[in-house]
Length: 114
Length: 115
Image 1 (cartoon, each protein chain N blue to C red):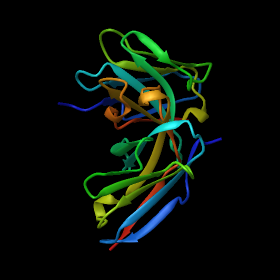
Image 2: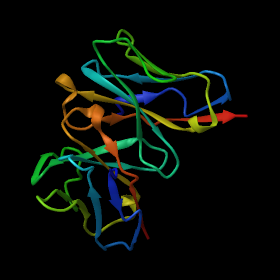
Image 3: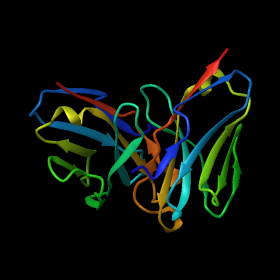
C-alpha cells in the first residue's frame, strides 16, 4: 500500500517557466491538501480538493497558482510564470475523510527557481 | 501573524533523557491539535493529536498536554533516542469537529540528540 506519491522530488525552473507538481493520494483517499514550506518555516496551507472539486483555496496566491484533482489521475499544482519567491518545498497530503488525524503527507517536491 | 508558534527553534537533549517541546497558540477557537515530526528531506509524519475537550493524551513514548487556559501545547518524548532527531511542528485546526479545511503550522523546533 504505497503512501502519498509526489513527483518530481526536485524540480528546477527558470524564471517565467511553468511548474507542474503531481500528487497521487493513498489508495482509497479522495481528499487532497497542498501545503508550501519555505526554508526554516512551518507548512502553509494552500488548497483542499476532493475529486473534481476545489473545496477551499483560501491559501492559494490569487495569481499564477492553480490546482486540480481530476476524476482520473493525480492532483496537479500548477505554477505559471514562476519567480524566485516560488522556490520552496511543496507537500501534498491525502485523507480518506475530513478527519485531519488521517492526514498522510508525501515526501514533497522541492522547487528551485533560477 | 502566526496563529501557532513555538518557544525554541532548537532543543538539545542527551540520549535517554526526556524531551519537552512547547507550543503556544493564540486562537482560542482552535479545537484540534496535532504534533508532526519532519526528518530532513521528508514530509511531516503524524505523531499524536488531541482535541480541545481533552487535556492529555498518551501514545507510545509520547504524551501531548493541552492547557487551554494559557493556550499552550506540549509534546513530551520519553527516553529520547537518536532516531527522534528531527524538526517537530505543532499544528492547529479551527473548526467544529476537526473537519475544517487545512491546518495552521508553527515554525518548528529542531530536536538534537546528544550522544
